Structures are given as C-alpha cells and as structure tokens.
Amino acid sequence: MSIFDFLDSYSIPYRNKDLISQAFIHSSYVNEHKSALGDNERLEFMGDAVLQIYSAERLYRIDPPLPEGLMSTRRSNLVSEKALAAVVREYGLNEFLMLGVGEEKNGGRDRDSIISDMFEAFICALYLDQGIEVTYRLLDDLMAEHIRQIDEHTFDYKTKLQEYVQSDSRRSIVYETISVEGPNNDPEFEVAVKIDGLTYGVGRASSKKQAQKNAAKNALEKLAQL
Image (cartoon, rainbow, N blue to C red; front, top):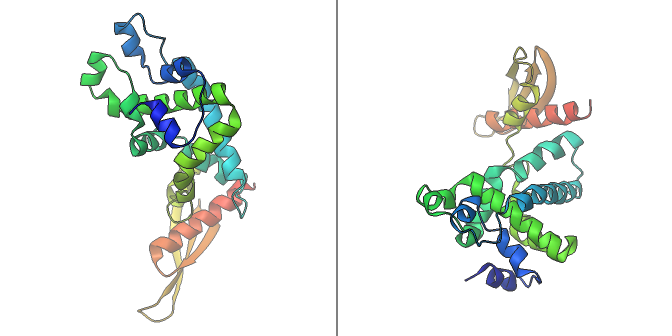
C-alpha cells in the first residue's frame, strides 16, 4: 500500500505525486540518497500553520462556545507532538516514511518528533496540491474523534489550571471541600479551588475528584475572561 492508495481510500484527489511523496522523506534519507526529491522540513514548517488554523476553526465552531482561554489550551493539546503522532500511528501513516538506515535502526519510524513532523508535512503537501477544502475534508476524517475527545470528560482541567498559573511559581493552588450532602451511597461534593487563598472556582459532583475537576474548569473559564 502506498500513500496514494491511502488517499484513494478516502476519495481524496491529488495531482503532484512528487510533492506528496516529499512529505514523507526525512532528512536522514536525503543524506544517504542524493537523488532524492528533498526532505520534508520546509513542508513541515508550513503544515504546522495549516493545522493551527484548522484546529482553531473547528474549536471555534464547538457548541456551546468555548472561551478564548480554553480554545487556546485545547488547540495546543490537539496539535501537540504527542497528539499528531497518535493520529499517525492510528492510521499507519508512518509506514510510508522514508528514513536513513541509521535513523531506522534508532527507532525513528516510531519517534513522536519525527512522525508528527511528517504528518505536518503531509498536510502541507495536500494543502498546496488541492487547497483548503480537500485538506479539511481529510483532516475531519482523521482527527474528528480526537477533537470530540477533548471535552470535559477527558480534558485535564486541573493540569491546565496549574499550567495557567505556573508562570509565577509563588502562586499556590488549593482544593478545599466545602460540603458533602446526601446519603453515603449517593453523596454530592462541593469543592472550591483557591489561588493564593482567593476562591476562583466552585465545582459539584458525586465524587470529590470530579468536583475538583469541575472547580478547576469553573476557574479556568473565569480566568479566560479576565
């Protein structure tokens, strides 16, 4: 199977096979094959921008609307090296990667940094060859589930709140249980999250852990509007 068979399976058209093939050529391969088309580094540079605008647009269209601060953190999560590498592995796109012998032996075909760059280069090549509509169509097929997963059930609000305030190491975050109501087999916890002693968010849930996450989410939403 080739990358063109892969594109055919999604009914994605292409014209410039050399351009698309170049997206899968790592610099280590070019160093050993002087007749190669060239590596994918320039394509990777532009592909990053294409993925940034794609993810921003898809997050913008989520209903109910996300505040700007959460859109920013979720976009970072969606187009991170780890996330893009996961997409590559899910669809086996790293099978098409052309590596030098040494890089192959060193596990480059499964290294997050290499295969995420390859994915960015691939998206750029398709964008240059077919334009934004076709590129978005493929990205929707490949990344729709990853976008859906970035919701309140999988999004680590506590970590993101920590990251939000970590620029000042002197600031402290404390989660305080305000109340526990209801019977032992069906309690409801109310938790406040405090930053330097001031309450920034409150959350309720049937478990203390989820109540803390809800409190962090509430705090992030407020901080994003400041």
